[in-house]
Image (cartoon, rainbow, N blue to C red):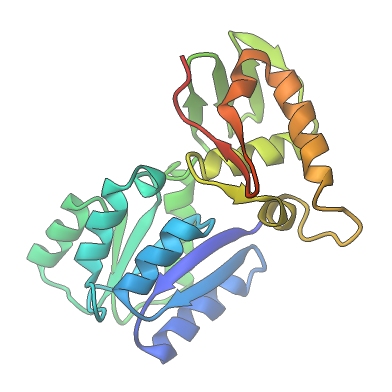
Length: 229
């Protein structure tokens, strides 16, 4: 699956440079926000896997954006990389204390930035890899591609695991059927969006008690809720 990256940058040339660097390998899709308030809206309303955040943004600066995202349950675990011309120790420390996962200064190497993105995701900020999700009944090991419910292994098809991973990656946030189709099936035009209902039903059945964590939001889509006793 391609990752979705939000680049919050008000300088068009730099935003396009970052977009090209991340999309060149074909495993990322980049959305650009040119102001802090637009970045917050995009992060809260869309299925974003990682944010690259400039500090000197209009309306809301990068520090304010980072603070807001860390305070919201839906984005509290969203990986954030600060990308800024500010090189002082005070700014770096402030960004990291607010919850940024990494801090890259301008000018930067596009290849290094892409590597930093991969490294942050590997550390499991969004549960993409090398991470384990656990709840009262469910345990998912992303690195081993293993799922257990009440300590009993559950066999999922590749597509079912990708569907579960996508829901977990954006847990506590509603994903529409169209968005799930795009993220898990790559926008395959031969798959009807309503077919998502069938796949979600099968996934729930296999997850047993943990299946209640996959919640239907009528008229919108599905949401994986974090805490179920």
